[in-house]
Image (tube, rainbow, N blue to C red):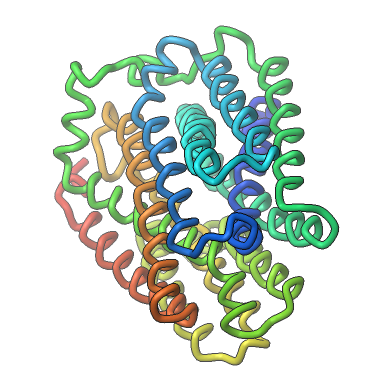
Length: 395
């Protein structure tokens, strides 16, 4: 009963709400891209610059969040991240010049990166952290499911900038919740590990760990794959498959729905079947490759179901990799490793979607799914290499 109460305590529920907002923000992006391309009269490669500036801000957040937590504590760090994101959404809602749009993504990425990193560290410090982290990232999927529906509906009557007013309003509510629910001195249980600086050698040890760095590479490819599908599937369906805009929006939502359901369902099912987390990961990795190949082969009318299946197998990969950090790194290095994984993962989230757009610009949007198949195979190789390292099994 205590564990159940802790799993649904107000701070934890608020954490889930924050990840819903993060998911909404991620989910609207792909639907808004075509409108932004038309409005600013740019091509796919040029709009991809926003991926890089967002990722730079996110990377900075991951690299600095330990010092931020040590200096400010959990509540104030979350308020800093949320305030940065709020300011960025309000600027975007004014329809700034394209240069400002690109630059402000630094603040978007930083604010979102602080929110994600702090909440991952906080929940990782609580009892039953594996369950909490999987559920946390499942609620990201809830938001990512709602995001395309929200954007597709609003675009029928309102300009794309109106979506950012909604995001700003949701962020303001979240900030009030953080200020009210979390006391000023609220800290993660693992505060000493968070307080350590690079001079203590933790970051250097993490960067020298082959298992952790291979896992970081795995998550970079994972995020690149997830964002590539989320950002370009709408364009693939509308321009490549001739689907109606609203139907394409529903198909992208089906992808995020699959991702969410996978996070809620696959892990408990694996436990019932007696599968280890490593075997579950392998099954999901193979499922991603197979489902993407199937979606590539089926007619456009079934593409929504295909994307849902891709999301279903993708879903557990990120939170399970985070939960397996104690198997990949010594306990004192786990908090630092989580920060490194978060920071490095966004590199793939910028470069790989940009590469997908560049290939689509030069060859055709039909290349999206072959591109995703290649990324799926690369994920499999990197993860198998990570768990094969001695530090992954020596306890």
